[in-house]
Image (cartoon, rainbow, N blue to C red; front, side):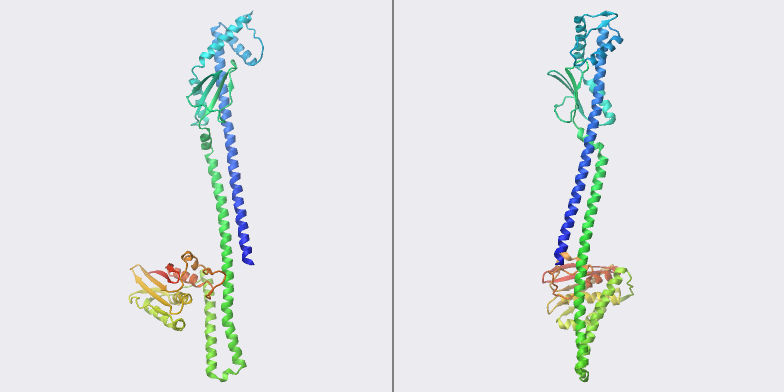
Amino acid sequence: MRKPRVNISNRVIRLYAGIAIALIATFQVYWLYSVYAEQKILVVKEAENILQARVLKKDLNALAGTGAASGLSDNVSSKLADVLKSLKGEDIKVKISYEGDELLDNQATDALNQMMEKNDAAQMDIKPYYLDIKKEMNASYPGLEFSLLVEKGKNKLVFPQHKWKNTNNNSQKIVSQIDSGRTYQLYFRNLMEVILYKMFGSILLSLLYLLICVSAVIFLLKNIDKRRRLMEMKDNFTHNMTHEFKTPLATLYAATEALTTYNILDDKETAREYIGLMRNDLKRLSAMTESILNDAKLSKGKMVMDFQMVKLRDFVEGIVSDLKPQLAIKKAVVAHETIPDTIFVTVDKEHFTNVFTNLIDNSLKYSAEDARILIEAAEDGKFTTIRFSDNGIGIDLKYKNQIFSSYFRVPNGDQYKVKGYGLGLSYVKDVVALHGGTIELVDSKDNLGTTFEIILPV
């Protein structure tokens, strides 16, 4: 029941992580959109202020020009402009007094008409007004492209010429103070691009923040998954070690019980047989204990090497000779005759013997009877390459890196048909690394065998 709870927990963790990333991304998008909207309002408002100031200046210039043409002083023209501005949109008759004389209604109307006519003529060339506005806008927003639209009734003037669109990228209409029928408006063609360019720093920081958050969540998930797998491997290790220790201990207990209960000591032949079984099981227990201790030393970096130069062929022959009892049980053959006599390697004899023993033992465990193990070697002047090949059940290549991790065993459902505790290849890799070499699984096929390759510096 434990495994399903772990899986459910992992799914819940991933769900929460996904929700967290989605919320962070949503917040970042909302924040950037808010900044963009505020920037857009600022740009449009500034453009409207500039446009309004320019329109007011134009109206005042038009009033001043009309006053001069009508024989009115600049002071009168200025006052007239103020009056017209204040009376915008009001249904009020205007009386104009000049040097104490009050103009008649028709005279005032004629004066105003002259102003409007002059203003109509002035509007024919809107390029100078566009250039003035563009100059001021470029000071704050370089590269901003827009067109100026002037409308009066059904008449429209656009500069620069561009297809006009009624969109939210347009400014508010600015109404002339002396002619309520005339409006001015700006149309922005690349407003979004300019604002996004100004927001480049904010966008970059937002993306960086999002990347850091996502990376942290992914790292956390991987770490959790790694710890979960490590716990599972340790659980498997504890389970397997318990059985590994239980078998020889049970044998030892049965043998000692037989020796003391059934007077087997009187039968020297049978006694020697029992003592032999006990010795073998004690050796097995000692080997397992030594393996665990070696793994602990390697993990802490406390393993001390005693390097010696040995002839590789003689070294392998000695190991194979020691393993003859195990080889005989599986009717296995270790072929190593092709190793040249000229190859010498500098190794720690004890630990490198364990390397060869572990690899041969694995071949025996995962092979049927009549196992065939081939050990080859070659030297190219800089490196010595040693290859171990067998005709066993093979290893799925997707586990080629994981098999060298402590406690890892190739999954086979919840059952392991072959006894082991997942420390052999981990120990082999660490010892080879302490010799300055590498080991890897170079080839493996289902039920056809496996090939490991060790490379050592000369």
